[in-house]
Length: 238
Image (tube, rainbow, N blue to C red; front, side):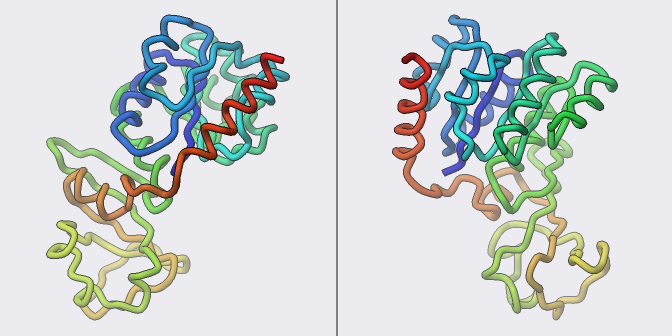
């Protein structure tokens, strides 16, 4: 099961959190605002009150095994920069930070953010599918319930042709194009045989793409995650 931490629940952070609450993921929320923590305490795996720019406390509280961290410190630019730097220092691979300005975004990228976004709800909708599925590389809502996405072909597809897989019939998806590690997007024929690491550009409804990418599949028990959170938090209190 994916483990996601949200550091700071301002506008963008709350938008991402609301999206994540609809999915089968473990969520850790860290914020100084007690009202924010009380609002989400029963809905998330853990809600901890602390200052994220306190390096010692963050190191003890934030597991290094997190799949992704979302940083939204509101308009506190300095705090978001420090938080991104600390997360990189912890070795977290996916660090998504909200930027207030282009310059702020540049600095976030320099200090450790792997993806910088600007505060709007549409950004949250585009980011979340990439966080919770290893197969989704890009995700673009284009209106109504239609989505265009870049999806890595699963291992079970390797060696099979477009015709054999029949994505439209079996998954409700339209295959727009295919690219490989060696080639960019190109025209394909029904007898094209998928190779390892091929990327498919597909269109379909949100639900169909979610199902195809395994976004809602359980990937394991959350027990280990919860136990690690409690253990780390008890050390912080001590």
